Length: 71
Image 1 (cartoon, rainbow, N blue to C red):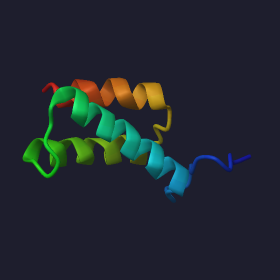
Image 2 (tube, one colour):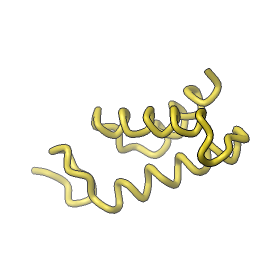
Image 3 (cartoon, helix red, strand yellow):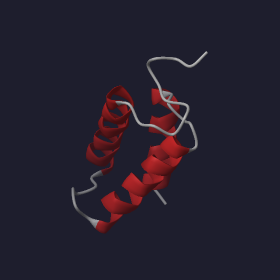
Image 4 (spheres, helix red, strand yellow):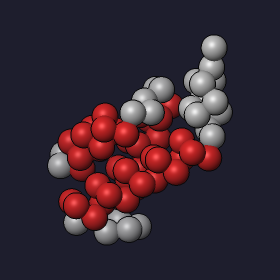
């Protein structure tokens, strides 16, 4: 049975994208990444790739995006 909270079919629900944006924004602030910068763009691509791979866990997204931000 598919959860109503998260999309497993590749369709993004509003709550999924809200969570992804919150984690992305938090990592940007903590890592000093400027909005609109090349680093922010790369990080957003990484965030969407994680989402596309089915990662919806906030803690996992946070840890992995922090790791990507530091590369």
